[in-house]
Length: 220
Image 1 (tube, rainbow, N blue to C red):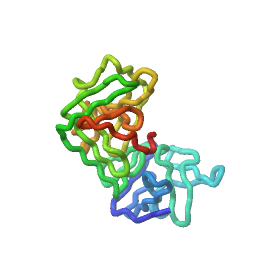
Image 2: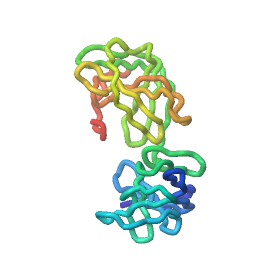
Image 3: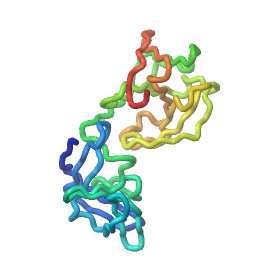
Image 4: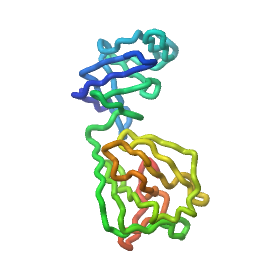
């Protein structure tokens, strides 16, 4: 597994208690898509009490988070989702640490983007915002006025992204959760606020009249 020390100060909270405060957190790529934080044991302020399956309970004041820590040499891996808050410097992060080698660029465009589902045109726009994210296909975010909203069925699905925020979804016909929207994205992704995006992997996409191949990605 690839790893490197991050220059960011990282703090972790649970139950309102400071669990860890590190100025030398280690980013570890346990899987290829994103890293997780391992913190020097000396920077963990909570007590770690042995639990089952080589895990440790995190005890911070009256708060106990069962099985939320693992030890690796002199490093502690805290389960990201089990903690209440993670801060990089003074700003909260969500879902998982941001990859320092991943970029997200959002560019205004006048290219003609058309989306078809089962042969039917569901969206057609000449004012997309194209989001380029390292390791993923370009995403075409379209104004709702250019989308056949009458064909979209609201979904209860919600997902979160550390770069963009929380997304809501729609389904189209038999195709579940193939359209999403960030209504209140994180500050660095404000350009896509209120725009709809379709999975390139699951629809027929045309850009300037040219059909696009359905890409292979973790979302295929």
